[in-house]
Each structure stands twice: as C-alpha cells, then as structure tokens.
Amino acid sequence: NWGSSSLVSDFYRRFVQRAAPERHYVVVSRWVTVLLVVLAACVSWELATIRSGWEVLLEVGAGTGSVYLLRWYWWRVNAWSEIAAMTTALIVSLSIRWVAPFHGSEPAVFAKQTLVTTLVTMAAWVLVTLLTPPEPRDTLVRFYRRVRPDVLGWGPIAQIAPEVVPVHDLGRNLRDWIVGCAMVYCALFGVGKICLLSGRFGVLLLGSSLGCAAYLYRGLSRIPPTADSQPSVGRRY
Image 1 (cartoon, rainbow, N blue to C red):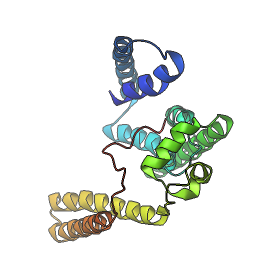
Image 2: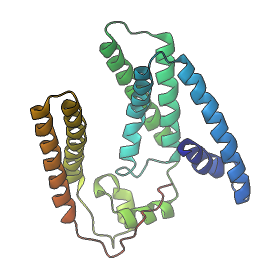
Image 3: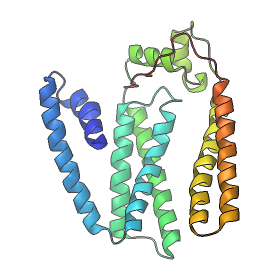
Image 4: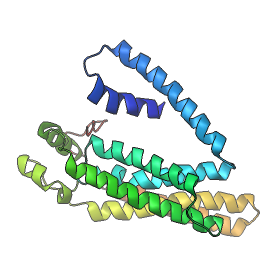
C-alpha cells in the first residue's frame, strides 16, 4: 500500500495524469497494488531463505537512506532524486544477487553487496538531482518557513525568506540520530539476550536503551515551539 501510494501520488499523478478525478487515481492505485504483489511474489520465489529477504530489504534501504535524510538538509533534492534512488537501489541489489560477482563468507558477501548498492545509488540520485530542475521556488520557500531546516544546505532559499530566523541544528540532529540508533539497537539486542537467558547483559542493554531514551526526551523537550507550529509539516514535493 505504501509503494502504491508513492507511485501514484508522487509519480503518476505528478508526471503522467494530473487532472483526472479522484476515482481514477483510486482505480490506478488498486492496479498498482496488484502489480506490486505480483512483483513481490516473483522476488520471494527467487529467495532461498527468510534471511535473504531481509538482506534484500537492508540493501535497498541502505541505497535509498541517503536521499531520505538529505532531502531535509539540501534544497536541491527533488522528486526525481527519490525516484532515481528507489529505482537504482532495486535494480542494483537484484542484479548483484543475480550475477553474484562476490565470493567468500556469507556476511562478507552481504557487506560487499550493500556497499556497492549504496555507492551506486548515491552516485545515481546525486547525478539526477544535478541534471533535473529544482522544485518550484514557492514550494521550497513554503517548506523552509514551516520546517525550518538547517540553513547550511538551504542558503539560496533562506535569502528569499529573510524573516525566518536561521537555524543551526545540524550537529544536534546528528547527535540525536546516533543516540536514537543506539537506543533502538540496545533495546533489540537487550530483549534478544534476555530471551537467550543472558539476563545480566540483556538488562544492561535495556538500561542503556532507557538512558538513550531519557537523553532524547530531555533534548526534545527543550526545543521551543515555533509560532507557526502545525501538526503536519507538509510535503516537500
């Protein structure tokens, strides 16, 4: 359903058929859902183990993760950037598994496949971003005023909206991101250790996860609300 929503709302409705009634898009989304189910069945048929399925998801996610993060910090990222990232990551990850150019232990092969997929995908979406026009200026200014991203990657747009106080929170966000990752992994491995009867180490990991959560809560509670705070930040594209 998420894939169908992205393909219809972000691609089909934007670039193929813009003025159709809502019923038309609902019908198209149903057919796209069926198509995605068929494609997913074909991919799962080729998978040998459940682990290989998770590895494919991790490879594709690693390839597209950079554009999902940088779209908040770089004003030049557009809809074509995400389309290029998703398409390239899927094609490269499946092609590598089909050709199997790497050899060695299973963890080493998986690491090499993920690294190649990530590098090729990043190169592809950055190139597409530079070769395609940016989003309309009004859309970018509206997004900047509401979301207020770090001014480092939004300099040209910040000049158009001088009434918005520049924000410099990239370092804090990176720190919170690292702590958030530590919180999630400590919770996962902590529960796993307890299930495997390594209770002392598991409790230690869960305590670390709670500590990270407290740190994040304390930091987020200090962020003052903006005058135009809204429950939804709107769409970038």
